[in-house]
Image (cartoon, rainbow, N blue to C red):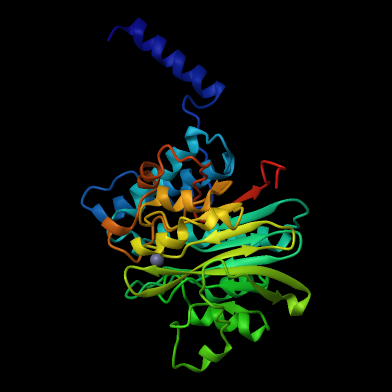
Length: 364
Ligand SMILES: [Zn+2]
């Protein structure tokens, strides 16, 4: 290298130093702290490398979700962030990773802060928490569907702390449990609601033979039959129809249509997956005008399911259920494939996101 070139490079570097760094530092969110996590050599430490990569990825995805909250049309940045989650979550041992556990906790803690402080005067605020947990607030009532801690057998540290879920439950007026599986039904959470005098609606077979069974509200599972369900100590009445769904051939799976005093109607389908149930699914739109359908993303013939409800909006759930092996952990990219060309608007949401639903038409 000639002296002239060397002097030129030196001058350039000097100017660069004076003018600030050539490469802007990548902003870090809550999950990635350069002081703690920066390390530049991973040779011989494959697990440490994968953990660092997961942490960096989740941190950036979290920032993307904050910058691009749920909206239609959907910005590409959101889809990219959701696919980034798929990449991390579909490592077999992902639920054991500290970064994944922190990501879930952190995002649901943020939801709790929002749930504690959000007042709704128009429409409905919809939070999607873990798996198929939804919390929905209108001006008069807060509904919870399949609220669980998300603990996994044999995986220490994954799931939500008791006090976090207890605080969320404290802000909800009623709990709907779809079916008996532990990613949907959590007896300790049901206990919290019952102890506060709040109804818990579930199919008859959940906890049969246990003392708690007599305290559960078992509404008739009869297609199109509407029940009045009093909540908030009788101050508010919900109209509820419990459709007699099933997971597979024989697991009772409630599919409740819940109508709030404002006239908003919500459906969460639990693990609905049964061909014969289309007998009533196909007919639902003739009985109810559905605002938001929250189906399990892997439900049987999801387009036909959606056609049964004809909702104003679909918010799918059950992506990245970490208790499953990766083939049934259900990535977001597959949700997009399954609901490709959906006739109904689709809003895909990550753990701990919220969306303010306003009914798009005034026709009903
Ligand atoms: Zn499930």
